[in-house]
Image (cartoon, rainbow, N blue to C red; front, side, top):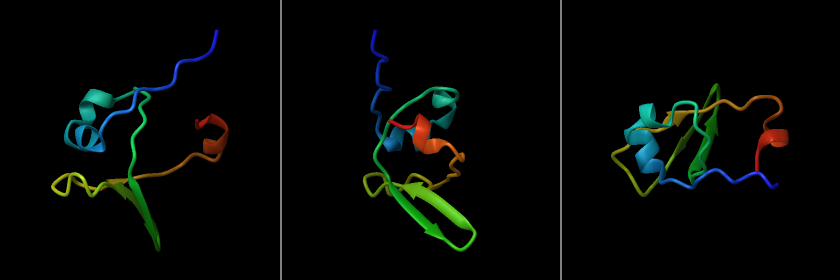
Length: 65
């Protein structure tokens, strides 16, 4: 049996209600921006939503789809 892909959700929903997505796998489209000692994701579709700090594990490529 093939594993099911995580659902695609709007980033605006995740940014507005992060508590609803704790320990859940989801997929969304964002802009990834990185600078000196910081990295964040955000979306132009929800300009009032906060950007989110992001860190990737060392094996993120192995577990990403």
